[in-house]
Length: 249
Ligand SMILES: NC(=O)C1=CN([C@@H]2O[C@H](COP(=O)(O)OP(=O)(O)OC[C@H]3O[C@@H](n4cnc5c(N)ncnc54)[C@H](OP(=O)(O)O)[C@@H]3O)[C@@H](O)[C@H]2O)C=CC1
Ligand SMILES: O=C(O)C1=N[C@H](C(=O)O)C[C@H](O)C1
Image 1 (tube, rainbow, N blue to C red):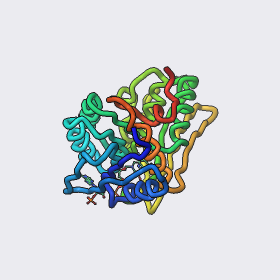
Image 2 (image 1 turned 120 degrees about the horizontal axis):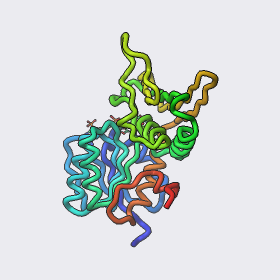
Image 3 (image 1 turned 45 degrees about the horizontal axis):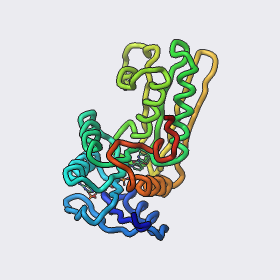
Image 4 (image 1 turned 90 degrees about the vertical axis):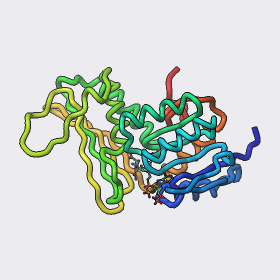
């Protein structure tokens, strides 16, 4: 394999697409082969990897096409997938390498391990878990992809799936909070890049684990590192824990 690799950018004119473009410009081992947005048909044969920050629907369509032709590898950062769309991405990953993550930052991927550790040790009968996130006013999906990953880590710490533990949204007058559930809340305001807090609360004390993204170039750099990693992988569905070498064998 040549040291030079060819990258496509999906969602190129978007906030993340532009950040990815800048992150790629800083590297001397990358050629940006194609850039595309909604309604444009890219020549995927020009790419070793496509970095995709678009929409869940667009990412599923791209994954389907890439899988049908046996490449390129994909790095998918879009969020807001339905369970059926999750399955479509997993199906495509039987044919090509896909690195998918709701957050490409090192800090959040460290936080995931801390949350799982805490959830495993703090008894669900005594400790409630609540996940709060804040993002810019243009973000359309909630809870954020990162909040859901943190929720999955908390659920895994308790040996369960998030789908079984997720609290319905609190709104109006309802029943008291059910023991062992994981709650989510979201803020959309101004230009907030990305704030995530996981709160563990007992009757006597509160433990708070949190992450703040200061600039979205953070996510772009992580996605570019994932692209460099993905281009030499066989088919499979990977995430940033794999790229960073955090996954235990
Ligand atoms: N995993 C992570 O670390 C991060 C994930 N994200 C996620 O990435 C996604 C994009 O975020 P952001 O850049 O802020 O959003 P933007 O709305 O700024 O950009 C989305 C881009 O995708 C384009 N697009 C829409 N449909 C298609 C399509 N079919 N094919 C190719 N491109 C398409 C849009 O084009 P047009 O304007 O022409 O419609 C637009 O340029 C969101 O889901 C967000 O949650 C964001 C930050 C970090
Ligand atoms: O839309 C965004 O901006 C972000 N989306 C991701 C998410 O849904 O978690 C990651 C990051 O927080 C920014």
